[in-house]
Amino acid sequence: MYFFLLNLALLDLGCISTTLPKAMANALWDTRAISYQGCAAQVFLFILLMSSEYSLLTIMAYDRYVAICKPLHYGSLLGSRACAQMAAAAWGSGFLNAVLHTANTFSLPLCHGNAVDQFFCEIPHILRLSCSDSYLREVWAVLFSIFLAFGCFVFIVLSYVEIFRAVLRMPSEQGQHKAFSTCLPHLAVVSLFFSTGIFSYLKPPSISSPSLDLVVAVLYSVLPPAVNPLIYSMRNQELKDAVRKMFPYIVLKHP
Image 1 (cartoon, rainbow, N blue to C red):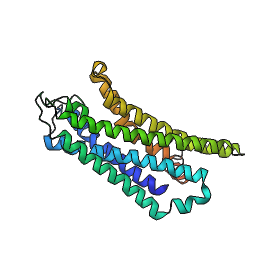
Image 2 (spheres, helix red, strand yellow):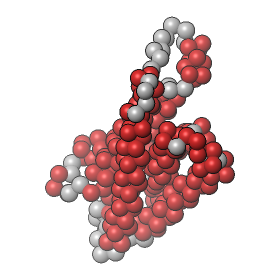
Image 3 (tube, helix red, strand yellow):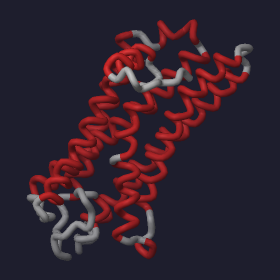
Image 4 (cartoon, rainbow, N blue to C red):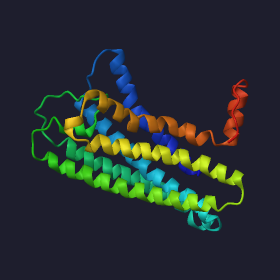
């Protein structure tokens, strides 16, 4: 789990660093400019990191399932080599997904201006600037990615159904509380990440508005990477002790 948390921390840091610094700099200097190459780089990195993170969250759900439902097989199913291979698969799938979407999106001619009505370069807003029928290639690519993401989401939900069934069979209420307090925040973040991301890419143009687009984009691109460190690290007793030493007047209640 700590190996996966390290990868998740790197992905979260990358997601935040891809969008927010440029948006904050533009707000500070009262401009909305970004170069064409910078926009392409932002799209590539954002898709790479977000796709890899979603794959990693799916792997982490499987890790929790094995740890709680099949603890005696944990060492054989999730050894060091298997963990490294699964993490590499998550990064690799994110890279391929990013190459596919970036190449499709930026091969389109843009003839409806060059203003992206968002605080970062987001694919749906870039597609609105295209006047070529070739944009349908990217639409189909987005739908295919959403189909895969939905499959991962179903796998996560089924994993947690099995986890909760196993937890409810535990004789100890303390064990049940510990398992629920660890799993429910993760499931909440995954649900928020998936639902807002899908809504952002599939919402009909009739209900689209700048304020709604901004809120939805923040919910799926900024909020999950920001709260993941709190959700996972604050369950760690060693980290709680370290925080307590740094800030002796803060009281952290044990779950």
